[in-house]
Length: 116
Length: 112
Image (cartoon, rainbow over all chains, first blue to last red; front, side):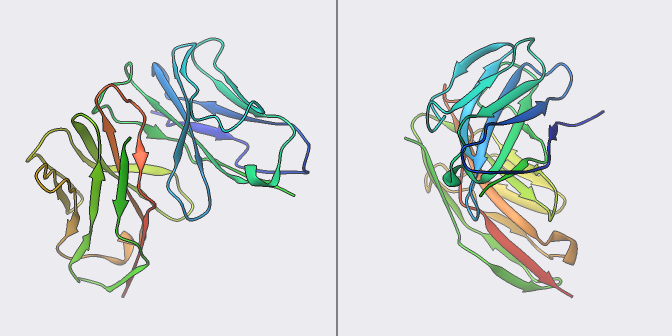
């Protein structure tokens, strides 16, 4: 079946602009995660949804970052007033059941954001 | 908190050489351990995982054994191919903490 998809794949924004990044998880997957991957680094956790409930947003770097999943499927990560330090690849991942210790997370291809 | 330390790259090998990428971790509780691979231009893919001590994960000729006594999960392959060229990430997910914690990644280049 289809994997996790993300759009756009690339986004160039001027500093101060707002951006919205979309994630379509695998159909039926309960859990959805957002990660941020800086150049040359491993992904770092941003936020977690179980269905439509955002259960953890402890990784969001500032109040300019906001994520939602209103119907428990598609999710949007919004960054307001973008700054150059927001430049990174934003990864979305989903897993079948409520997050468990050994549950496999399936990743999308990512959105590469460049803030000029 | 949880952390993962993996061998820094880049690693360059000739085809059919033996590969080891070291990974050690620090975690509260009893984590599950993962290796993810990122091929050029593609997203992260699960390569293998192990959920308890002494478990061996294996896939596509790669293996890693969960060693609780040394807090390690080293990735090995007996004979690498050019198509194995990618970035490899070690990660953990422990206890009630469902987030994946990743290492920095190791770039592997295999030359023909």
